[in-house]
Image (cartoon, rainbow, N blue to C red; front, side, top):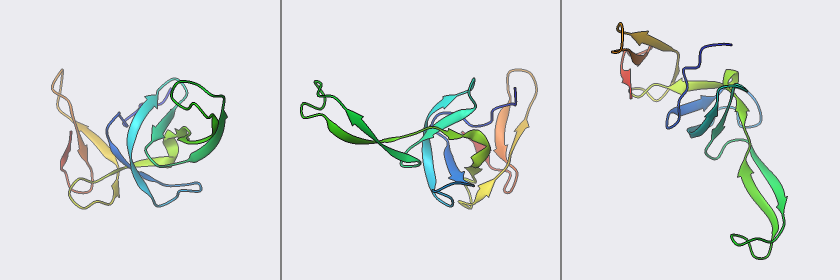
Length: 105
């Protein structure tokens, strides 16, 4: 299994697919499947039965998972896509953007 550098709350850039070039915030990461749900990216229509949240039922727009290989971090300094590195040893490891060297929180 590949190492996952993307975490919940990160801002990511979409590299491939229908939403190529867009950016969004990661809502959820599924490490086992290697996929993430990104806010406003890969929107699909889902038919739903009536329930407490949607008394009428009908068609609901929602985000579908996108593969992690199609996502890249956004550099906090420049706002452009960048790769991620890890600095530090032991428990004090931090992620940083390779383009600017800025720490990713």
